[in-house]
Length: 59
Image (cartoon, rainbow, N blue to C red):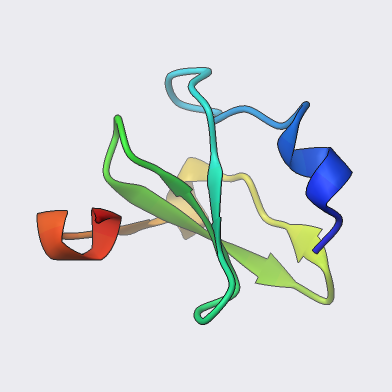
């Protein structure tokens, strides 16, 4: 994952800041509690591909 991308990428739902979860290879939106997958180093920022995450996963 290119960390410079995190500076410009925003959540497609709320336009909020995204955080990288290295272990799961996902971009996390804490505001919407959604995790977006990264496939072949490309973030898939489609709401239909995101999964809901719990509060435990956010922290």
